[in-house]
Image (tube, rainbow, N blue to C red; front, side):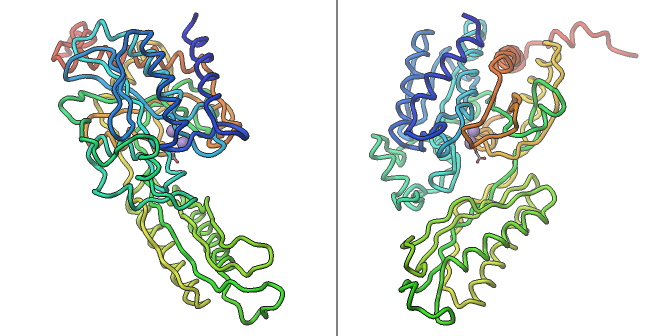
Length: 417
Ligand code: GLV
Ligand code: MN
Ligand code: MN
């Protein structure tokens, strides 16, 4: 079986581990996410890799014992009605690369499947990697709620996890470097007909949870001039967020979630909870946009007499990825004679969290229709197979570099002068 065929088979099998409805739905910290981790661990066992799961639900597949070790990986949870490639491709590509090089390396070799990467369920992304790196503030999961009002801690406990007991195991120097493969989720590589992308910066994200109050009462008998309607206030907020997003030339701003109470045809809306997602590759601009959103919400609520509460769910600055593993990926592309493009990531990734702890790099494969977080998400497994070969080369190079072995490219170059 070729690498691309094995990827196809595994991607199809993982896509079946999903709640009903279109596309893939594997909510963060839920039972289906656990099932997907178990399926992948079973495949890894066939390659002779041992699996360990930490209390936060991060699964580590050990392909080569020893420390320090090289780490590759991604996530297996999904947004509601998402695609089958987001995260999954990075886990499967990581396994292929790890299995092919582990026995050649002096360093250890591990694959990590982070839990709860998607911010869709609890508003804050990358919970598994934050817990593994010790970046999660105490009690974080108690304060995050899903659309049904259940805390991230309760959901994790129901899945048999104990995130509060997760030790910060992902540390340097034990982790020599982290590599992640991901679909681009955008249109740049496809438009430029480039097979691979090496990411330089990962956009940050500010997430604001907004609760707007209203007075729920009969929609037939309450006069229009005597209402306190939480949803019309929210509508103004949504439009203002869009305007701020449009004005931020390189940034974006979105309201993707809106919960209306009591959500009844015949009651003036009594409350709305919405979450604003502000992103940028520049920290200063992101902060400015988030401040503009806060000011707009306060102004709109003030003008309408609507009670309002704003709570910050996450404030992640953009992250510049480390030069060393990035260079290893670029050099590997060169050795494989594959043109690549350096580009930023508008989406968030675990690599941005791990980068605060260990040198990290991110490799993109094209997304043929440029669409992600939708059942239409697409990816060519031949591109992923190419990425596997590049990552395998990069891992060999990182292993050599970390051991201080002279780079063969440099030793064969005649010094000038
Ligand atoms: C992760 O998918 C994100 O929302 O950036
Ligand atoms: Mn992802
Ligand atoms: Mn995603």
